[in-house]
Length: 175
Image (cartoon, rainbow, N blue to C red; front, side, top):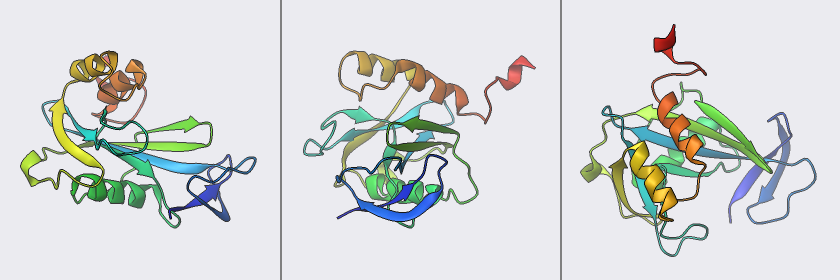
């Protein structure tokens, strides 16, 4: 049973918890995290979900993602998800999310990390992931259009690739 902290609309923990899958109370939110690992050549590490996973079975996805559990900070949740899904140890304690997306019942913190991870060093397949590979934004968008990738907005994929080199809403080269 997975227990989540409940947050208010301003991302402040309310002191309440809820069980994953239970109904949300009014004005209750939870935290989700994603980590996108980029190779120095610009490709993103993507994963194919296991066929028995609830939600998007067999589809490809960005590197890792999942819900924060009770007591997690955003960073510790992101570190845990990377370790659980692909068996890779990462330290995000001094890192802020590159982007946060609000959704109906929560907040999704997205971390963009550059790390030339050797695929052979990852613990894949795992309980959640059947395989991983490096992919360009064009390859990911093509996979979205062909129905083989979780149907993210293609503009979000492009934004993740655009933001991978630094924080902020403008290009550093445009100064």
